[in-house]
Amino acid sequence: MSNPEHYVGPWQVKYPNELQEKVKEAVEGFEEFLTLEPDAQDVFTISDRFNGFGVERKMGDGSDASGGSHDVKLNFDTTRAGIESLEAAANSIKGADGKIAQGFIKSIASLAEYAHTAISEVGAVIEERSGTIGFRELAKASAGDAYFRFLHYPAGVAVDSIVGEPHPDNSGFTLHLYESTDGCEWLDSDGKTWHPMPVNEGYATTFASMQTQLVTGGEIDALWHRIIANETTHTVGRIAVVCFVSLKDTPKYDRKSHGRLQEFETGSTYGLDPEQFNNLFVKS
Image 1 (cartoon, helix red, strand yellow):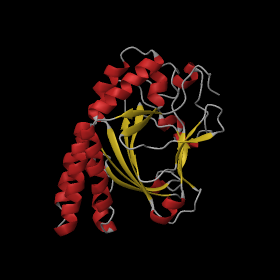
Image 2 (spheres, rainbow, N blue to C red):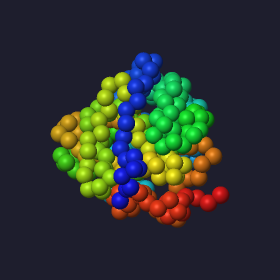
Image 3 (cartoon, rainbow, N blue to C red):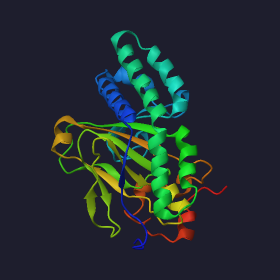
Image 4 (cartoon, rainbow, N blue to C red):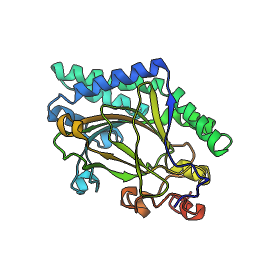
């Protein structure tokens, strides 16, 4: 388990009014997108056509079609670089459905343009807490490739069931920008206790991921978290918006060699010996 001197936990970063408005617009666009018939949504199904961006459905069955995942959700993923191909797909949809799809993609593009300030601020917090000189500049340099994910957890799942498996994220750090209801929890350094991790209006709830634990030499641990269905999720579903920031020119977690992080023993990366931890990453 983690050395008590290491930081384990989330923190909140207030983001500018302009970004708050862009998040709101993007959420409204996603809500409208979810009203489309599945065949219209599936125009955006992740493929080489979209460079790995678009719609991915997780059915909770651990199948190859779900990427081995036991989550129950729909993901819509993109970066700024993926917007152009997604715009082309939206433009191919006719009528009112096309207008909804076009509006959603436009709102994502606008959100991506305004996220850099909050990303830089998270970098500053990590630099201060870990003593890792230059981390803010690293975060700032990485902002252009930020990865935005819109998530929909459907209604009907059992209350208190796990709809998002426990895991740390494999990027540098994560910003939770919005959630329609709570249910996200983070794992204490004791490896046993789960704490609520709400997203408060006007703030991004942020936490470190695998690359940050690597770069800071374990001063800040990648945070284990999960999603639990509450009564609201059971009744009407749950929507969330997150932003993953992969650190530029930094080794990436080696999933090919070590598998999905969800398959690790929960909390097992907390306080892991730096040499052992380094071995989890792709060698240059």
